[in-house]
Amino acid sequence: MMMNRHKCKKTARAKNLKGSILKLLNYLKFYKSSFLFVLILATASNILSTLGPKILSKATNILTSEFLNQNSKKINISLLEINKILINAAIIYFLSLLLSILQSNIISDISSKIIYKLREDINRKFHCLPICYFDNNSHGDILSRMTNDVETINQTLSQNFIQITTAVVSIISMTIIIFTINIKLAFVTIFIVPISSLIIFLITKQTQKYFVKQQNYLGNINSKIQEDFENHVIIKSYNSETKTIKEFTKINNELYKNSWISNFFSSLLIPISQVISNIIYVFVCIYSFYLILKKEILIGDFQAFISYVRSFSQPVNQVSNIVNMIQQTAAASERIFEFLEQNEESKDIKDNLFFNSDLKKYIEFKNVNFSYSKNKKTIENLNLKIKSGQKVAIVGPTGSGKTTIMKLLMRFYDIDSGEILINKKNILLYKKSDLRNLFSMVMQDSWLFNGTILENISYPKRNVNLQQIKKATIDSQAHDFINKLKNKYQTIINEDSENISAGQKQLLNIARAFVANSEILILDEATSNIDNYTEKLIQKAINKLMTNKTCFIIAHRLSTIENADLILVINDGKIIEQGNHKQLIKNKKFYFDLYNSQFSSNN
Image (cartoon, rainbow, N blue to C red):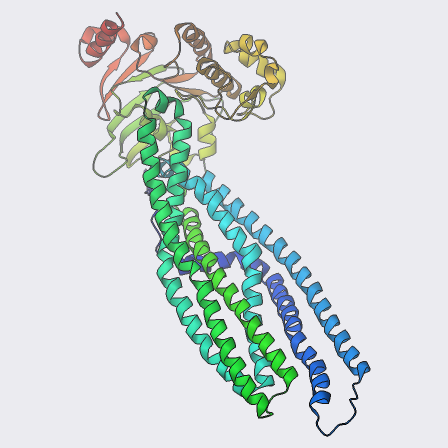
């Protein structure tokens, strides 16, 4: 039995911005009634606000008509009527303000929920992706998608959605009102607007590709920063600061270039819109004076019309400004949905088998073939039988496939062909969670998270009590150094675990494996890069940890595996020798040469 392998590759660059925006809008469908309500509120608020100058123009007409009436010898102004107009205008503006506040609160709540859902989906996806995705993609770029790109969308939903809605409603409502004031002036105004729209469209089309590159290079620079921060000690030890600065500067220059171009063209939108608005304003003023002289328009209506023309530029400028943000949002959306659409780990089959806890775990590899790429096989025709309780050491040159065998056993990758059996059943028949619960791992790079020592050790089992944890630390030789710390088990391990030594970190990882108490143990270079004293402690802890367990030991230092029940010598994905230490030394082949080379170098 075999299963299709994960198809992992580096994420593609921008291809379908329109499709990404549509996918983002798909998140809005759960709140379409709320969005509709917001649109109604925004429309009502904007229409009320837009009606203000039209209403106030009536008061101006009343005042000016009396002064301009040449046949009237006595000025008779109705203050009651003017006061009524002013009160109506105040009420309209106040209602507009209330509706605006209400719509802002609702859209803020909706956008928060959408971004919450988006982050939840990204986090779920993160934990469903196969190992190969993280092997093939920069961690900094992935982090940038989960933070910077999501924040870009958040700003658009929480701020720009209302602005674009208000701007569109303003343009439509003001267009209708200026036609009710004077058709001739309205046509002069509207005639020039399409020119502004065409210019905005052309600039937007030109700058979109630079916004996409900007988001991609932002991911690259985040990746570089993360890499440099994590390896700053190595950088300094090799005096590579200058080289690292040059590499950063190169990426930063690309980010700067694309940001500058996109921002430059985008910055043209507002001044161009303002120039066009000013041109409209001049034309309207000149033509209005002519119409006033011909008595085709009243002074109050002229005042209102001019007010609308001046206000007309504001929503146009808003649209121009929001277009920039929408372009960034389109690029950010595409990067996020690229991530969300990646192939997940292969699903468990239906009616999975359950592991019988009473059975000893018998492991077998039958004609297993696997490759990371089509060009070269990593594991070729591997056949192997491991009895329960055996201590199996795997040795061989770097890149020979030692760690890959363990990844296949735990189904971090699925094989190309052949079978891997546990208790004579294909591991594909078991749930991944049940399968992985069989294993504990102590790796070369010991991993601890930001939290207390107690939390780190209890990571495999959250319901473990303090007494069980202390027993695990005693067995792992970690108890003594923990008790010497100021806060003992409540000591906080910082983000990079720099407040404890490498050896102490490894002892905590072994304590974690004791807590897990899994049936199969994997030790991947667990004693490398450790001082001699700590190595003895770790080796003592490991010997106890391996009791009554099936163990796989990946080691470069062959002196640590001399007592293994079975030693597998791997080269180019094949088992070229197998046996115990004495048998392999007696054969005087690859293992013999490898062992003697280490023995000679150590002396």
